[in-house]
Image 1 (cartoon, one colour):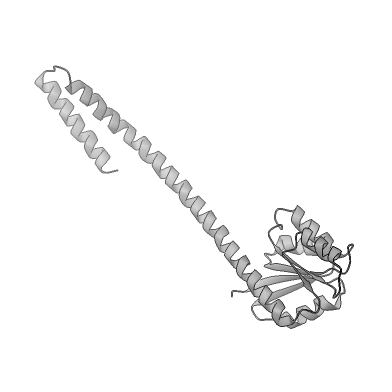
Image 2 (image 1 turned 180 degrees about the vertical axis):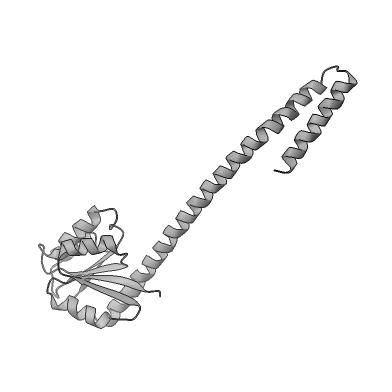
Length: 196
């Protein structure tokens, strides 16, 4: 696994602070922010693999962050994991899922289980970045190919026109010197096309 960045929305909730402390790792950059605005600013400045936010009730900052992330095309693809309090009712869990969270976990989830989830999401993130880079490279190669094909078509147009004109001339009854000069033009045009 390559290094990843994880954003924690820490609105003062103990679970997020505990997770952050236990998830510290040399290959992880952990960024803590206290507000939704600070989280959105951080998301726009850094490429995060995932965001972890505690959501104790329907008015919590985690839901506001989810709405903000899904409303902005620059952040809508970032994985959001919402942490719910133990015993949260099904309505809060349903709201968490419908807000656009990629995963919803309870605050008592073991750190080992959360670690596995983070590794999976980090793998998805790395693969998505690889595919974005591949798509950009393929787009660049396609543009170069189209440019090369256009240049070749343009460069072939003149010798090909000469070949076709010469073929039409040779179908007529012509004096030998005209046939000879036409044949020379055909050979010259053929050689120009041969080097392309």
